[in-house]
Figure 1 (tube, helix red, strand yellow):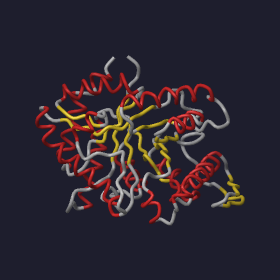
Figure 2 (cartoon, rainbow, N blue to C red; figure 1 turned 180 degrees about the vertical axis):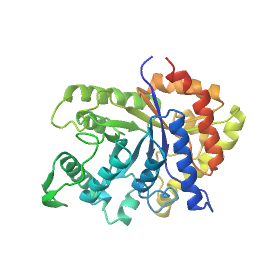
Figure 3 (cartoon, rainbow, N blue to C red; figure 1 turned 30 degrees about the horizontal axis):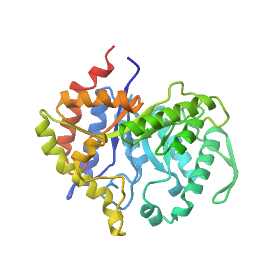
Figure 4 (cartoon, rainbow, N blue to C red; figure 1 turned 90 degrees about the vertical axis):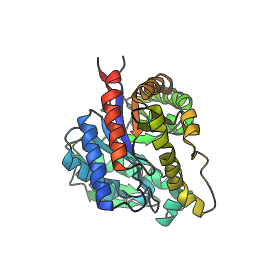
Length: 345
């Protein structure tokens, strides 16, 4: 059996009336449990000005997680690069890599919401150029003792980089691939990747990515030259309960609440993103949600690995209006009853 990996993904959304301090404590406890259960990593989303924005600075929550864990890898999917001062981000990345003893995964992206970008003064028309420029600066600063850069948005002249990362030449870069074009782009740069696509499209993207990575392996564009086997991940909402009926009864309203949270800002501007659905049955039929008893979920996870081309299942266990207790019970069942079937040799 080829190597298969499991991780956590968290949109960092909140329930109405949730006490933030209790929310953070609950999420940190879940990360601790995931480490004990053998999960490889945890990834936080970055959102702003929405109910999904309880960790608008993923680095802060990752730093707290670093202090309470010892093995699990910690990262963001993604740091929204157009919003950052690149030099400041480099320094924080190096801090996190040291605080976690070299466990940081560096997910990068443009950000999915034009409205969140605009609140931070970034026109959507500039987001791609800002992303590319910031990524170039990250690579240069992480790999060199001094930074020189003359770009459209940022200029640096002989800046000393006193704090260097633990992982060499840099923490592993991750990218969220959504199209054949950016699968080629990510493969050319050797990045680890994660997709939100259904199984069949994810499998097509994985094939394109692998071909691109093989063709360009070892080139000067390779951002992860130290990674021999790339992680090819896909994110799925997951909920496990003792029976299928119980799982569906609890997850169905929670998934609708997730939809309301993720579309709230879009609706404010009289539009709706076409890539989400409020209907859990539709999401399950599209292979973007896995819900049921441990037996049902095991079967769906097996099908996921067979069809998606992924070697890394990244599960979003905390979503919508699920309580921390419900999410923790679901994760515990998943770790006890599902993952052993895929990790035992």
